[in-house]
Length: 21
Image (cartoon, rainbow, N blue to C red; front, side, top):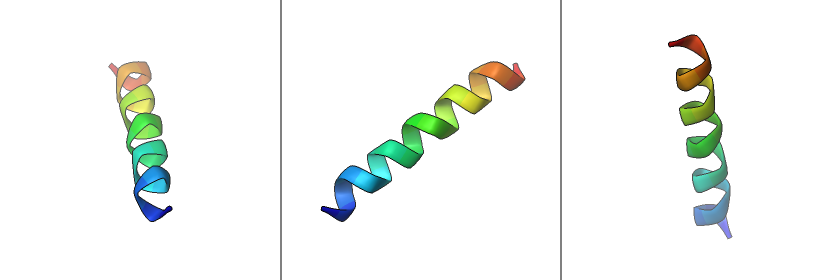
């Protein structure tokens, strides 16, 4: 169950990074 939360956070980080770039 924790693995899914980590993937969710990772996706948000990727989205934020793409937005920052």
